[in-house]
Amino acid sequence: MQKNVLICVLLLYSISCLSTNKKFQKLEKENENIGILYLMRRYSPLLALFDFDIEIYQYKGHFKNHNKIKIYELELKPGEFAIFYLQEGFYEIIFPYFSHYNHIFYITKKQVLFKNIEIYSKSFFSLPDIIITDLTKEKAVEYLLESGGMFQNQSINGTTKN
Image 1: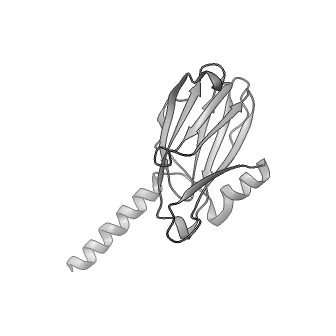
Image 2: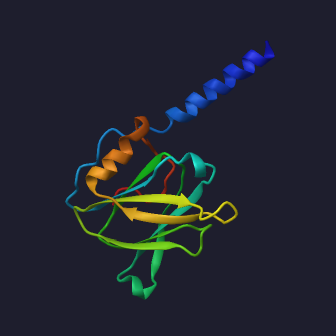
């Protein structure tokens, strides 16, 4: 009896956790005043155990000035994507646990960027590494729809639509 109750409670909890994130349905419309960044992480069964934090910094002016502020932070899990609304300018994606890797990019008004984050390991005994690839709109939609659809990360901390 207790075993059945425990199983039911765990099942309901799992369903409620899944329902807090919504599945991909459609792309955001272009905005005249801001750029849109899609960060996605495809599901990979081999490296699904590795979750990592992501921080996004906005540069005040050119990135060579090193004057930046943190505007977003989140944890991106396998099979999730996140949408960021950004003003025109330079930005940097930082992975705090992978201090050797960062990614600087520039976004303009009305621009929509699609970036895929992959975590991989060169060998069984090596630490995981990260690669970010730019995707076409078609490839991004393909990734967002695969395996029944990616879930949108709802736990973004930072500023909202600019």
